[in-house]
Each structure stands twice: as structure tokens, then as C-alpha cells.
Length: 149
Image (cartoon, rainbow, N blue to C red; front, side, top):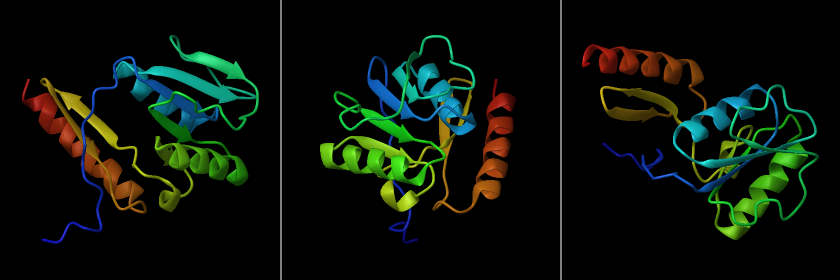
């Protein structure tokens, strides 16, 4: 089976690593929650944030070039194509892992659906267009992990 069209699943320790999320909407907050649960030091940059999660540093302003300095990974999840593009460009130029929510081709990693239970963690991704299929697979995996407990 040729897997070259897929992303390699890499599991890394995020404890204490800086993660910058640009955007304050539903997707950005979901990503922030996942990164926090894995111990990342999360900063959200957005003019407005629906609900700032506990433990997050919130910078209430627009993204500015240089905001990713010192970041291990970044997430561009705004409703502005230009801002997402700029975040992706800065991250890629600096060698920072980046997930650009609205353009898979500008990302150098995919944010997986997380499945955890029984001391196990699995991540599920598609090639970028199979969101319903990914969600369905993640639900099934979560059920299997719960049954193992």
C-alpha cells in the first residue's frame, strides 16, 4: 500500500512547549483545548475570543508579524484568508509546525481528531477533505478504547 499521499502520524511531547493559536472562534478554541490537555503552553491571539479557556494566555488584538517567535507550533484559524496565509507563511519560514485551518496545502501538519482512553491515544486524519469520514472513524475508535477499560 502506497501511503505517500498521506501524512505520517507523529506523536510528540507538548508539555511546556509554546503553541500559538491565531483566531478566537469555535475551531481555534477546540484546538486550544486539545493542546492544553496535552500540556502545551497556549497563547491565543485574536481581537475577539468567544470564551478564553482557563490556562490560556489571551492577547486581545490582531495578529502581527513576529507573533510566532519562540513557538513550537501554530494554528491559523481565523475567518480571514489573508491572516491565515500570513500565519502559515511566518511559521513555514521559521520552521514552526503549522496547521492552517482553511488551506491544507499551507499546513505542514494536520490537526487530528483525538481519541483517548485506557491509557492509549490515537489520532485520525484524512487527506483533508473527508471530515465526516474522519469524525465517524474517530467515534468508532473512541468506542473501542472505552470498551478496553
